[in-house]
Length: 154
Image 1: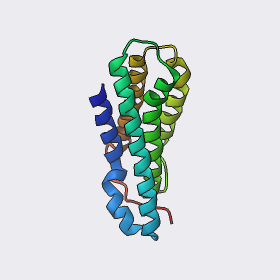
Image 2: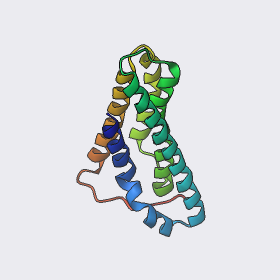
Image 3: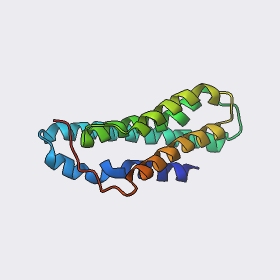
Image 4: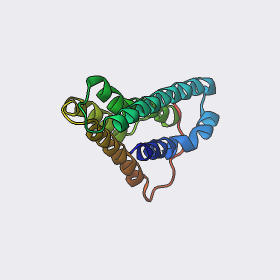
């Protein structure tokens, strides 16, 4: 489960924005601002990955136990924080945020109350399902289209 989540984070990170950051910096009217925005986005994504790792440890230690609210916060909150950072990063490169990232974030928030009633393993599976949906949506959107050029905010 941890490996799948890590692979999905990598896939979602690399998709378009991660590939085009150097070109976006070169095209930006204010490269220093874009650099600060990209740094902030990366810090948020890293915080999300660290929180997810804590959640993975909890799931490994207590897969079928009672799910405490703090556990749900890291199991679902880690991917949510990653998506917030990834959305900021996408905005820095393209001046827009993909709908699937916002939808994924809202789904993670909506899943929080029901996950309090289910074992930690199911909460982790739910988070993986949301990340998988985002990765699939990214691939479907890119199918047959040329790569989008960067257009950082002015």
